[in-house]
Image (tube, rainbow, N blue to C red):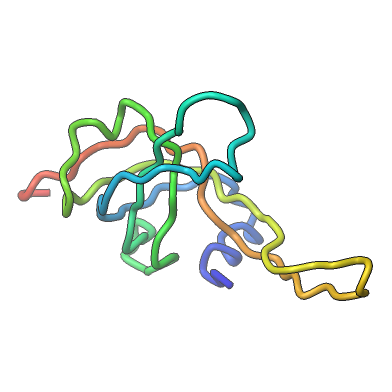
Length: 119
């Protein structure tokens, strides 16, 4: 569980400022698609930190948007994002198995900006 994101969420903040490192572009697998069409692209951001420098997540995947198009691998970015609570794990009601737990992630990144070397 991402306890640092949980603590921010529980403090009443559902949107905050973060930094991270652009890692790569990927695609969602066909079984995870909610709409019929092409393969939507995603971006992997690693080393997610709050603006105090505290690491809040190892990585997070975002849906690709035009704000990411000028980034190269290794670029450090700052952005605003919503903190989202969700269930992670496995459940099979037929077998009376529920191994899910609450986890936290970031969604809906906005104000994405590359950090220049002198910042």
